[in-house]
Length: 186
Figure 1 (cartoon, one colour):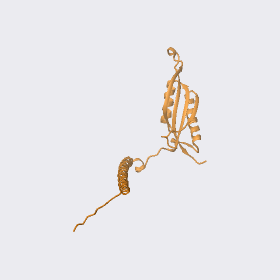
Figure 2 (tube, rainbow, N blue to C red):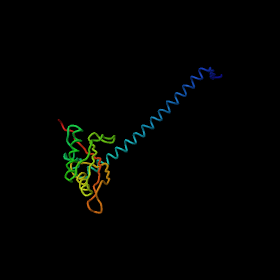
Figure 3 (cartoon, one colour):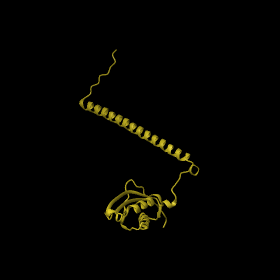
Figure 4 (cartoon, rainbow, N blue to C red):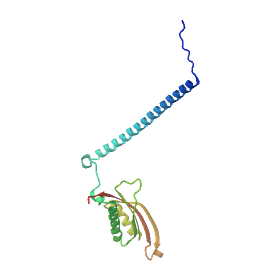
């Protein structure tokens, strides 16, 4: 007794069977790729959770306010209902500090926020002329006082004076400033 199968495939059936095998291979490759991507994403998420746990543990062990997060005081922010008004408050703050150093702001303009900025950031570019000692005092007051103001860039170029020690040189100063603001209700 002989048991066997004798398959005879014509050309169309062979092509269809080959296409099916290719389709199954493509689906298998896609599944392997998807599982690999999922595995990488899960590993990255686990790393981020571990870092977050370390930060939370360090913050909790700092003992500040009974283990609670320490936030900046209200005075650290420019409080305004709009970003434009917060920019104007930053400009007025800078003008007060510059005038206290016996100088005046030549130009100032609000700058657009960058991609890296959060929505609570205001930027300002200002130009003024003053001596080196008043500039040092101004920078100190800007970066250590409240509201918090950060100097992103500082450009200084000599303008006039400083001839043989007769009078101190006058510097043209351009500052790019960044500050934080809190939205208030109108």
